[in-house]
Length: 139
Length: 136
Image (tube, rainbow over all chains, first blue to last red; front, side):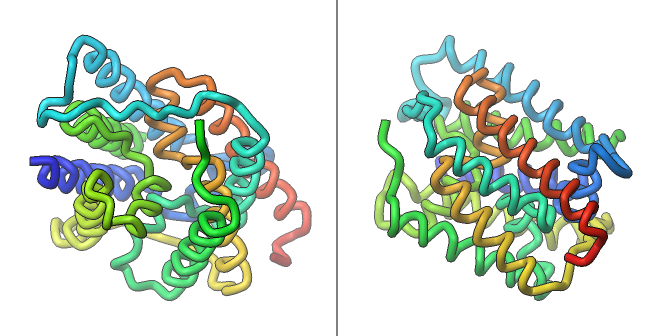
């Protein structure tokens, strides 16, 4: 059951990214270009997604466990520290350079475009480098 | 505007299914890291999520829909960006999905902070590149 729900969630997530145009790096960069030719439409993507998840999260507070059983795995980290800020800055710079964040890059994988493959290989290298050099954050 | 709104609703629905269904946060950074730790049973859902995610592209096109994509072809830029995004999201514990959608949706101050910071860094990067005049 967990596998099916995760599969469906991944599929819906991917379709949402494609439908919204989040998978198009040029559109994302135009969204970030607030001092130039700003295209604000992508704000609706995050806005709508946040509102839907807000209600889902609120609903879950009245439940002792998820529908498929087990438990709710709430992120344990709460502190705002240097690690969080440095990570967010590095991520933001990389995001602005090309217009790809991890989800859209993964969604575009099966386009087999060489640009996506280059980016994904570097993305994985960066992820593993941080894992080996610094390791997971602890609460 | 409607396709952006509909896409956002689908993304929110996807996050809701994962949270209410199996109690997991749909963060792409976590999913990617988990793909390298599939020997841990509690992380195996990530593989299924990943399969669904990448299957969306061929299904979307099979359904006759179009998803245009324009991206730089400069390998140096692509590699630098990939390294920064991979490294930054790992140490910051999340990206646009985990912090941006789920974290903001549950009103986490940590995630709101991360989202504001990476948005600002992205905006600044695009602005600086435009100032340099398309040489990058």
